[in-house]
Image 1 (tube, protein in one colour):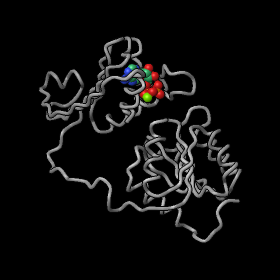
Image 2 (cartoon, protein in one colour; image 1 turned 60 degrees about the vertical axis):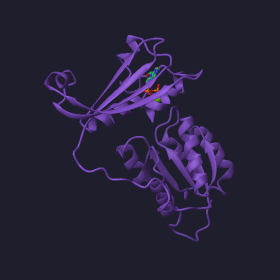
Image 3 (cartoon, helix red, strand yellow; image 1 turned 180 degrees about the horizontal axis):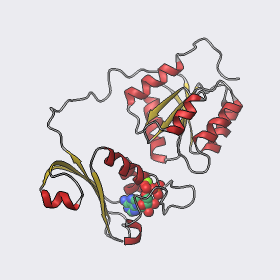
Image 4 (cartoon, helix red, strand yellow; image 1 turned 90 degrees about the vertical axis):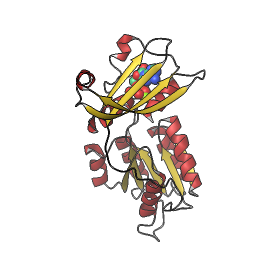
Length: 258
Ligand SMILES: Nc1ncnc2c1ncn2[C@@H]1O[C@H](COP(=O)(O)OP(=O)(O)O)[C@@H](O)[C@H]1O
Ligand SMILES: [Mg+2]
């Protein structure tokens, strides 16, 4: 998702986004260039026809907090998180780009021999609801997709694209908002400060934390302080629907709000 969002942002006037997958075999020579074991790999490449990058930027793209976006528009964590995810799977991610020639990100992941198991996309397991949810997320596309998912489940959705915006909405609508889905990592006011602000408005606020990273120290600390749940992005609709019901059906009968 981070690769797609970057590609989309690199093509403000439109363009093509191409995703390619193939099975490859790395011999001793090729694997050594990537510091991988020789063997079977799955290669995934994401190519855009956008602005491209110069060498200086290319050399820093995977650095945490490296961003060329204007203040408040980027966290510089998208590619650092891609790098971390791929590394955790014993793979590599590489980039090829030049100004004006678009960009290709290539991922190599070790192949497994196990049988392919098919997963149901949606249908069974999705639990519906009619409550009102405030979705707080700084990345426009994630916000849009999340809103669509929640509405498809039957919820009424309010949105906020930053911590301060979330507090403003919550301050005026705490009595109708049953639950807040809160992004942990946002520029300026992050999840922690926003959570504190929500708590000040309503000590019994129900919050489902979300993050592109798996649960870490910061998220655990917030859970310890009363956050009701954690979900990793990108949202998987069944999991999201179940976590929401789990939290919303707790302590039923209690009046919401202040
Ligand atoms: N597909 C792309 N085309 C052009 N530049 C890119 C692309 N992907 C990433 N970049 C550059 O790499 C930087 C870091 O990307 P990322 O880690 O996702 O952080 P962010 O998007 O928050 O800036 C971006 O600010 C941008 O300069
Ligand atoms: Mg990004």
